[in-house]
Image (cartoon, rainbow, N blue to C red; front, side, top):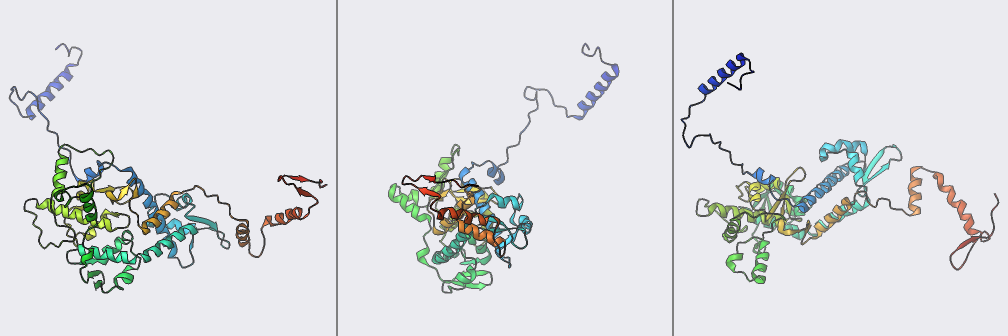
Length: 446
């Protein structure tokens, strides 16, 4: 009672009352050596696809490449909207401001256009006197070059579509799914008519949105990874048991391998599975190792699909359109996160993009193709930003542009050039010496 000497007696009574009510409400635990304190049970941290996606080891090179490609896609969308206009290849900046939500920009359209002067050219309309914008000639040339290269690689496009149809369960794919990854596969815009409808000895349009393979081509059967397996078998002198069902694994920088993971990965590499072009009627998942074999087959299908693309990358959401046709009845995003040495998911931008790790080195393709080379030129032009923008045009081009602004007349400063030409014709005023110096013979009195 020493502690309560200076406390009001009413407060002491209230505290005793609250203590008595708490003791009566809580269950009585008999005193003992093992229950002198109550132990709290902490929940284990959740291990889901979302947590693995947030805690994964990042690859700064591929993330930076994804951000730059998002800028290029936005520019190509703006060019597509400009091309759909009937009045010409230029659009007023006021009208472009309405495309902000269509394109998916977080900044204003005017600020975005000013960031890339090598891609967009802003000028004053000679009649309406308002600001207009158009794609520069360099960028237009690269867009036309990409279309021409795509047409030249028509045989390669046929091979890619045939291999995709051979991977499907019944040799059938939806045209809508191919249309979603048209640019990733390097197909032309009108591929339904120029490829599927033209080559009837290879493809058959069973419906408006369904394409079917006419006959199986055994020459296209081996997957792209078989070349790597054969190279590993010959150069590293590995046994066929080690290489026959293996995948190239390349972890990102800073990846920490947990205890026991090496042994699991080694067993997974040796696990036999049905390869992408081998037909299967019934999947026996409940057998010994059936789930792992089934998932490994899905890994092989996604690996082959990414190998057939131009830039060895595709959006994760668009893989869902191939689930039924390729028998991928699994959570694709969760399966990709289980194998960080084979695939890498980048979360930059509005969508998730999966990369094939073995195809990239320091953010660049190891083996580029003609279409990816042209797209790289376009990306380099975008990454120039505001650098080297003050290019001096020849004098004739400057005069032509200035005269075009004022119809039927000359600009204000055109009279200066003829005035100074009179000094070049008069040899008495200026004399040149052999050493290149210029001296005046006499002064001109004002």
